[in-house]
Image (cartoon, rainbow, N blue to C red; front, side, top):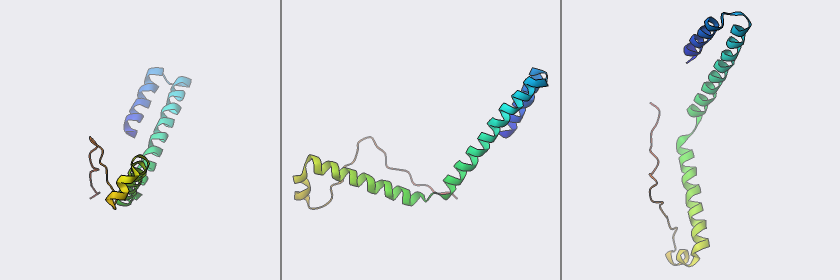
Length: 102
């Protein structure tokens, strides 16, 4: 990607004929390159250091808690009769896929 930005910078330099407009084009595309490099570094660090299994377990626990609270509000007698947590599945929602880095 940085090579493509460098190519665009050279193209802009040639099209503007150098001078002030060429320097403005170089500065603008240099800023774009710095932002792209920053985004890559932050994103890759975040993806590499996230504990995906703990995050999935937390999201599942949050979903079960939300389901239980909604059932308690809608039909508290159903929870008392069941004596156990009731799990409600949402139609059309696929379970999360499991994968790991090699």
